Length: 114
Length: 114
DNA sequence: GGTATACTAAACCACATGGTTGTAGATCAC
DNA sequence: GTGATCTACAACCATGTGGTTTAGTATACC
Image 1: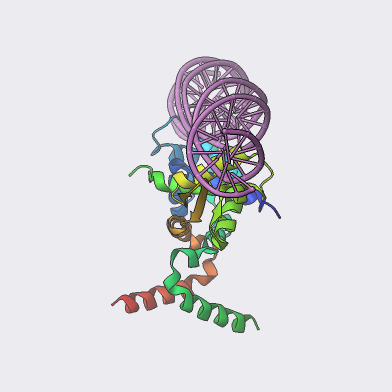
Image 2: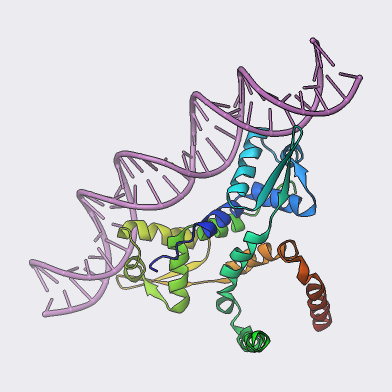
């Protein structure tokens, strides 16, 4: 395991690396939207916006269902869990003062699973 | 605030979107390393590896100090906090069944801060 | 001083990204 | 059927990404 090659994380982090795509995620977290509604607040053309949506689909962050001429997009946030878990690995590196609390929580979790 | 433009998050998420860079972060989370040690386990040339390190530096995830001819790199994980916080925003979207527990924890935190 | 070591810098390449414009195809409303 | 609406698709462009090779600079060691 020289490099932790996990294409899913590649796709998710890449999807999150653009402000327009984060804005789309934010919007979809409130409600399902069609492509026009997604494109409207973004300062770009419609095709550009739909390309961003497709990037989110590749990362499994957005699901699309076609209803008539509308393509309704819904947030599927579950891949964010993997992203969050990966970053949380290094929590102790950014807040060492919580080390004791973390160990305590780990203990509690272990007991919970037992 | 049409798009949540925050160049810092762009840089951090982009930095995390490549397996080699995640591997570097992992390695540096254990100990400070020079560039040769970083490049060794990666399956690429030395210049390619140092380019990845520079991407991590742009994202403020790695700090470098020069000691003689060696460039020692240290993980500065704090920007990961922002990334984690952003993804955690949508925790309820990926695990709705924990909604009650989350509200409880939020209450406890509020009381803690009060 | 001479040589190995650690790293930088530049040039180059293939391909991906992020955007545009223009055209075309369904579908809804009348 | 006509026209407006929602979307797709293709072509194109500039720039960025991820990699290479080659050459060069600075430091440590003998």
